[in-house]
Length: 392
Image (cartoon, rainbow, N blue to C red; front, side, top):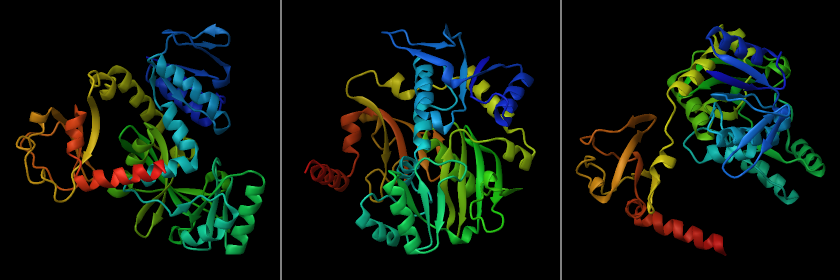
């Protein structure tokens, strides 16, 4: 396998470890400076140039793209995607994770814990926004900060108001977030590779510092995550569209509270704390995917007009509740169930004798008109009203 590692810092710990792990496994890995690429666009022949020469053939690419070059870096990744090269993280996943507002908007749609967060631009809405997250103290975050930079704890409403107004006067967009006091300056960093957590550590702030980032002087300790924290980390990465991610969570009284999903997590702190070969796990994952690539269901199956892939939710009281997949009549209506999601359990290609329960989510491929008929009348009416309101 030939692997491209996109990094502007070939000698930094993370890049060096990934290259070392690849070499140990017989993988031909090259570190390529992201900014040395040129993108050629022509009908049917997407190409990349590196240092003025046509890029040679690669089997996979592992992006380590810094926040300052997100726009160009994701453009390079999109070109790799167009060329059919396996991408350890997609351009869309990277873009989703880089914008704190966008990532929170995506995560908020799902049944995962996140600290109450608000985004306000109008000066008159600053005080009401602070109240909506529970009042002071509050956390104020720049939308595009890294390593704890641009994260401020405001102890009082007056201080919060002054900070927000100052940032807004310099055209900075900020989030206002509830301060999870019970976390006590601690958070969890879990490294997700594929569909599992391969390493986790707790970061603890030192002295009067509330930020636990290692770049802010925080210390680390090994932590054994329970199933809820592991499932939250994996689901968050999957929802963001990332196959390799660092997921940061607070330890709230009601369970994990998601803070951030990082598309280029550093490896030095986590490997030092856990003594695990995280870099090796990443290379092993990429090697496995290149050897046995995933099939894009949407691209492979959506070949006929009127057919598509959709996720259908089965509410309490649905006519399908209590029926087996075979007796549900779905197959007769040209609907095939690819996977059944029950809580945090995924059941691929479920047996026809399996009984459908309330709360199940069915990933289906089939006739769009038939799948639309599965949506309860109340839900369809509600969606129509929302659509009509949006038109106004």
